[in-house]
Image (cartoon, rainbow, N blue to C red; front, side):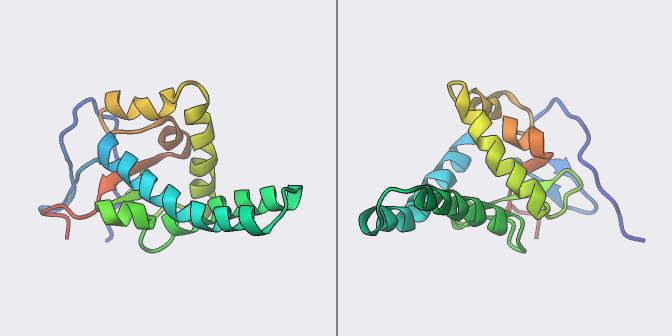
Length: 154
């Protein structure tokens, strides 16, 4: 019978132990910020090219939003559960059942980032104070960002 894990509420930053010697280690604000910077550079390349070659229009703005949305949502809900920036930093996104999140969860998580940033980035700063390193958008989407390459998790 397959074990069904669900991350319980916790107040400590200790790794969450799974069956055997496996454990989840939550990603911190520095690795998450570095991953976001890498991803933002990657996603801005086509957007800058569009700005150079296309006139400002509603279509171009919708195209920019679509590129950002699909870049994050498809990759974070895909088999690798991470964007190139997250993979470079060895982190990935999971849901609270320790499974790959759905495309809809990834979409909600992305648009939740705008809410996290809207009031002086307080939603992002929550990562520092949350025992599991969760931001506002992680809480809204019921997700966690964990270290993907950690001894005992392979």
